Amino acid sequence: MNMKTLQTGPTISVAHLAKSFGQAQAVHDVSFDVQRGEIFGLLGPNGAGKTTTIRMILDIFKPDRGDISILGGPITDAKKEQIGYLPEERGLYKDLKVEECVLYLAELKGLPRRVARERAMAYFKQLDLIEHRNKKVNDLSKGMQQKVQVITTLIHQPAVVIIDEPFSGLDPVNTRLIQEMLMQERQRGTTIIMSTHQMYQVEEMCDRIVLINKGDSVLYGGVDEIRRRYADNAVRVTVRGELPHIDGVVETERKGNERTLHLPKDMPAQAVLRRLADAPDSTVESFELAIPTLDDIFVRVVSEE
Image (cartoon, rainbow, N blue to C red; front, side, top):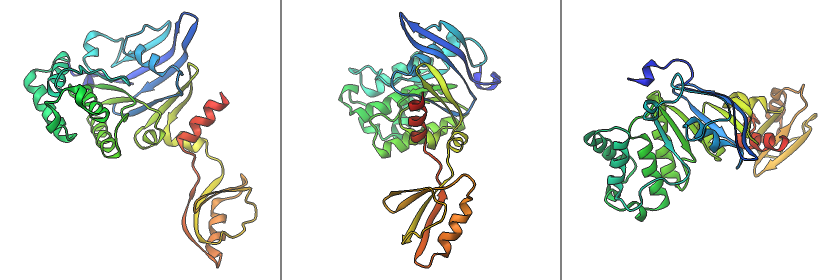
């Protein structure tokens, strides 16, 4: 049965989840939907309830309250075979050789060994692991082990991928390789939930996000829409020469050659641009609306909560 073609509506739907462990309430009220073929960011500070939420989706924990639908309904053993999970903690057999470990875990997901070996070799080439495939997992660097974990997560071509800190231990070159692999998965129609503290990765890769804090979902929506929702009336400029005085500017922040000008709510950005363009002793090198980063929004929302 091809889950990707038969399933309609959200791939994952989470409604009012709650989970306690004794007197400690890990998740209080979390709700969100994840659509087919999107990369969805599951964000929050340490201890917010992200991992507990993931484990409830995976049927590792049973929720005290709330509903979970995955691939069109409740979780089943057949659906579990359609899920790839990359936990933050390493889950490889360290005394096995890399290729043996990958093939064994692929077979546990139902792949014939011949197919698993073909896919593994393609991934080894893509991630520059060919020369390391006969080494023991324990002899690899942290970054190489992370690449092997990504391979074991994707090798059975799951309909749903849930990844926790996928770029942990990776240098910029290998980070880019893993990004490309995840983008390829999205193009295949795979639904990806990504939990990470690296907000610039979320801005670059995610379509939508949910922010969980103290067990509650406190921010939910499209990345661009959320960034614009939290934007003040401000512009970011880089000027060669002296920055001219501009009537009405409330505050000016400087970072290197870049200035952020905070404006009154009724002052259009175009008025600032005209004033800068008309200044005889300066040249405008860049000018843009000062949209806050997800990092800024994360800190602001968590602080307010």
